[in-house]
Length: 273
Image (cartoon, rainbow, N blue to C red; front, side):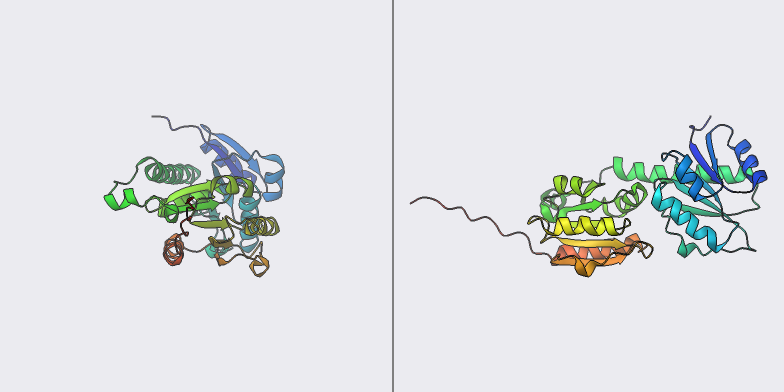
């Protein structure tokens, strides 16, 4: 049975490795680039898999992060490493990544990429298409406190958060602040991905000036490469955590913030005597 055709980006300045991977990926649509700069300029953004040759060690870490943040945040990454030029996985902000020794045979590298991608897609499909069994408590819990707004253009991050939060909360997603303010007014909490740095800061300021959003608890996911000055954002309840925080820990913080947030006061009806 033939697997579906994938769009795969191979990033390497090693011509022999690139050609061998191209042959191993003969059934797929393959793009190649020597580095992140070339890939960002020349390659379409809808690639599903990236095979990155991290032969440059620590320099490769920054290049991978640039690929991820600037254009290819929705792809799954297979990172080829060499023991002579080690990389630190914790420095790579890619959420969906698999490290593979650089001397692995090309066919095996491709199998790992396809298997990794299919496993991730199956997890997402199971999470999004299989609704949890509703208990009486779950049916009753449809108020504002059970809705979480996720603001991010990183689909991989959204999928990851959905896998951990989707069973407990009704998730509303938005890729822009405009979408967030249109869709998320009845959310009980906002998870805001600040990967875009200064742009994210402006978006948070805009939301803080809206009377519907200003009182909501915000969990702001920050990245050291693109800092945000959260002290300048006049939100009543805000928590800043690293974008690389384990999703289990993020879920704990969401539960804590929602539990500690009182429900909105009921609107008093005035009747004429």
